Amino acid sequence: MLLGALGLGSVAASGEAQGADIAIVVRPDVPVENLTFAEVRRLFLGDRQFWTSNVRVTLLVRAPGARERDVVLKTIYQMSEAQFRQYWIAKVFRAEAAAGPRIVYSNEMAGELVSGMPGAVAFMVADQVPKGLKVLKINGLLPGAKDYPLR
Image 1 (cartoon, rainbow, N blue to C red):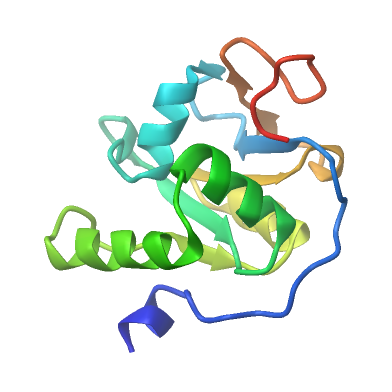
Image 2 (cartoon, helix red, strand yellow):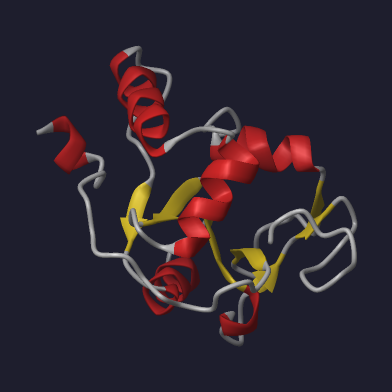
């Protein structure tokens, strides 16, 4: 049941936007514009749990099978799907995190939840970022830049 509670069950593969850069998005009121790649990694590993003293980070992660998830697992987490599941089960079990990431099933769902949830952070295909969300720079670069790390 813990896997289901973490939303880590399997889902059919998504054929969305092959080869596009992946953007890290937040609400405009999140007080961050740029993160180093190491900070992005700490954020998605659940090691950074607050943006400020009173705004908790809520991770939104695409469901298994999505290309965006595959890119993030390979690039940010540097884990397989099985390692990712085990990582979050262990982190929650050790009480190092209250819960694992919330699972989203589309870029549209990610955008809606980020818009409505203070402190939420998600990743999505860069050319599908809805108006009203802030795309965070990674190492000073936005999606589309030559050395942008999430492709």
